Length: 272
Image 1 (tube, one colour):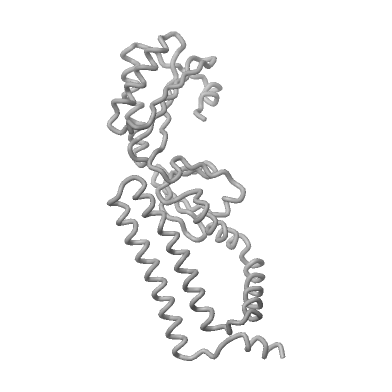
Image 2 (cartoon, rainbow, N blue to C red; image 1 turned 180 degrees about the horizontal axis):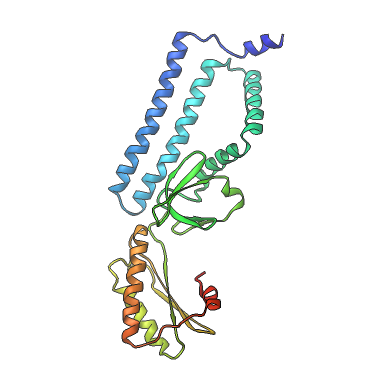
């Protein structure tokens, strides 16, 4: 009797049904493949928010295609009654829950990530000390590329228990912070104005955003933080290098002396 009930859940599978299922799967895979090739190409020819929006469409399209294909295929195989659907989905849920708990948690977190947008392709994020640009958002993990050109895959389940640091949060603006450590005997106002000029004259600076210099005293000297925004988040390291090199050159010309930090002060002076 139980066998008869199980068999009663399914329709008769004909060659026409098999062909239709195969066509749906092939079309779904083709649409996903095209979106993963075409949208990054389109994004490379766009700038600012348009580029980020084009990249953010990739995981959204993939989720929609999977859902549409699933909704299409299931009625072809299973008798579409409420009792049958509850039985099949309940059994599948129990099996997946026990066998693939962490994997399913990552999948659910991936769906949440599509709608809550803690990160998008093109964002610069940090998770558990790993910092890089989001290149691809899969169903299970997010792929980022670090400044050292290392690809790191971070499971979406990190959303449940870890802090996600997003430097630009879907926008074209990302703050760069450059630190300078000077001995205390100097004219702080001259140093402040010089560092502002260094940022203002950089070819990478985004002039629409503020340039800020923060100074505070430490036991070993004075710590300066120069904060500014590059035109494009991808230029952050060129921008940081430019500010550091020209900032040091300008400070030596004032002249001022750079602080020589002892090992115990190095930890204290590490930027937040």
